[in-house]
Image 1 (tube, protein in one colour):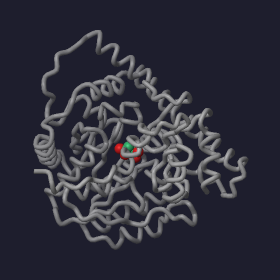
Image 2: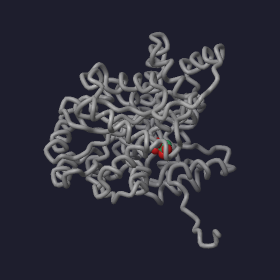
Image 3: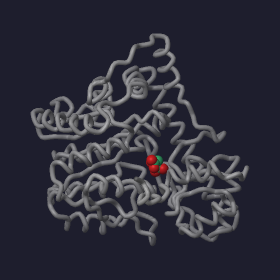
Length: 395
Ligand code: LMR
């Protein structure tokens, strides 16, 4: 039956975890996957999560099926977090469904879009998160890219990006990173977003904003500003939300997809189609993680604690960026390392090529993605010197 089945390649990101786990090197460092580790190299269990779980354990509940679109209070809390106190929320113009992490939200959205317009083209940034292309291709789309990263400036090629959007066919789906661009860490400035929104609007494109790192750049409101620009423009668009990183709930798969529509009636129709997609994929979502997030977001005390803990993670990443830049210089690196502190979020696009990244793994046990992406959120004072020494050797 399976004689003709070919071996699939390892996943470029999660496959590194498998390789890392199998590596016997006691000094190994995992800077591959986008996961935040604390200063002791431990995955944090946030206090807000612990407290919410404790309260849940004290009042245990039986678990029936959830509605197809998830916990209603969760969907409402997501809308409030992502869209604030906006007219779109008040008017009921947004269709939100609980999803299996940010990836699950992207997949539900991609499937819905494919049912709506299978001929549409999809544009992702060059480069983008490795899974964007695979996800939209597996939904049936042809995927190409718009210019994004400019290696010469180690910043965003805004003219190239906007130029590509201005030439895209109407109906083209444009995948955008709200903040903390994955993999480059290079974000658009407010004035750049204005140009992107104008291009999307004038060409009748469909913006799909992936917001997996809200709160890891400059703050919850700052990182979500792009969403508000699209709201103000009055266009329909998609937003995928993930709480994997911001709640350190990777294994709970807590995310959401929101679709901003023109009217409440339209949102009702869109929601009915989203529910069809969910029902035919996994029926309805799981309870536990989404209940934790609901309880934290809707309790003033737990919400304040969460914001504080998120700010702590953000601050530590910034400290590690500064330390990485300084120590590379001190170790004799000839590169201009100022780009490291300009980048935002968990990742630094180091500029190292695939062969150099492979040497980092093989010779030093330092794991990063072949694109040159390293996860700064996994650096700490105990491993940074070894990482710096290895980077200087391979560069
Ligand atoms: C990453 O980019 O490392 C994360 O988003 C994890 C993943 O699913 O790839």
